[in-house]
Image (cartoon, rainbow, N blue to C red; front, side):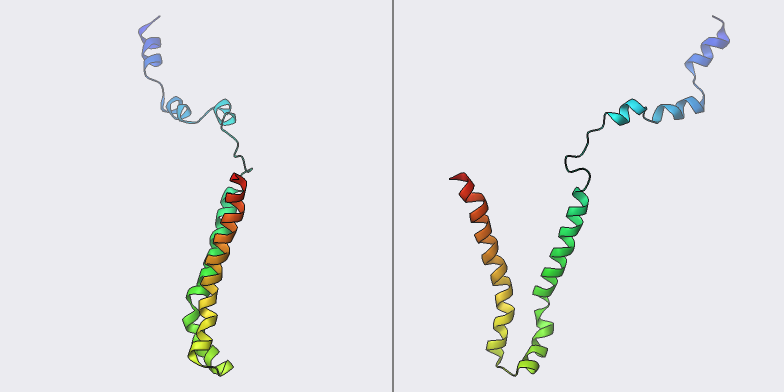
Length: 107
């Protein structure tokens, strides 16, 4: 071997160095397939939007409270029950479903 051939093998060209960073087709095909088929992030985004809407209605009841007072013409105590029932139902139903789904399977 001559000295020119040795220097070319020791010092690869910039094109050869860039090609080393690109993964081969074999490496890409060895990536694991998501068990949900790739729809996991769609479910996460949909759940976020649902929680945003439901909690938005629950926590913005104070804005609607004055209008409900005028519309129904009832006392403040009776009208406040509407806003109290919303989070109460969320918490009650959530606990009941937890007990039914998870605790019954254990027994």
